[in-house]
Length: 138
Image 1: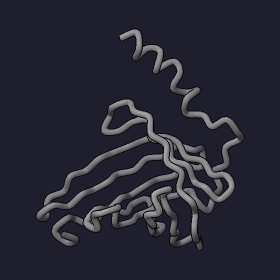
Image 2: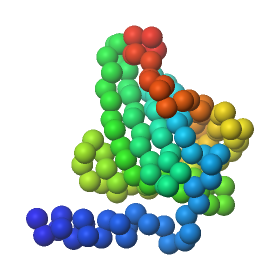
Image 3: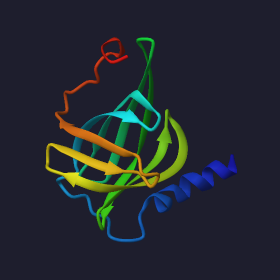
Image 4: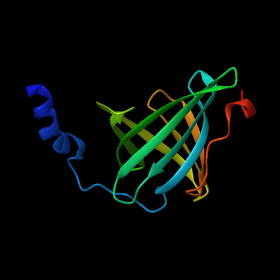
């Protein structure tokens, strides 16, 4: 229990980058994409807030059934790299940070890659967008 209290006290410090974080308008908003490494039937809907808040819903479709994962955290941009720092996954405290290199961006769509080299593509959607049901994509 004491360890959880220490994590709770330190988490704001762990979540803050050691530099002035940038949250450029061209990356803020709602983004939808499909395809994960080794699985094209997965999709995600992410929200990057102008204040650095981040949330994402991942959906895996198996035989027409959805399995969803919800994560929250922070994001920032520096030197062509968008860093996503996950601090909560399905309501559980966690800490995971991934840098994504922005390869192209035109305001409506973006292409970016993980350090592994896997390339993601997403498109800007409005706040009312919902992911398609699995029976349409699996």
